[in-house]
Image (cartoon, rainbow, N blue to C red; front, side, top):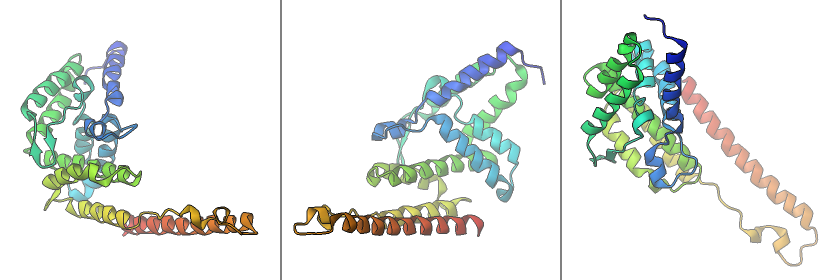
Length: 244
């Protein structure tokens, strides 16, 4: 591999670093505050690739490289939304054409980086096993993020289209068990929404209470104890699944 100069390396890092400032369009359109960036998304897709490649019996290094590259062109062209749920709403072909130009521009200064341009092309063509798995990982990470936003108390219905879109790619595929687990977590979270304590339950709102301070402390202690048990149970469920 040709040695990259200091100038070319820094220029490459500055360009690819723009991905940290490109926010995921789908979340922005839904009104999510402090939405994740495309770089945030790509990082966790790469972690999924690193962890799952051995059990999926694919080349781990290739899959991790593809994860880091798969959305890199968006650093220069932005995150263009071409699907909504299971429907196509824009031109994927035009998006890929612009992304290819961006990827080639980023790696133009070093011919040995052609590998990364080719990897990106392999992903978009969706013909190899690694490319298809990468698409599934991409969608799996998306619904993990959707679930996190739902748990931050954004309206669950905001994210229905993302779950529908993921199902389009994950149903009856190699990663469907993880998708089903997330669906169960979504349903469980909906069923276990924390109950708000009515103000009338607190003694300082009730006339004639003679020991308001102690009664209020008891109310809060009970609330935090129940909340703590819920968190403990959630962690136990997660730990059992992760180590099972």
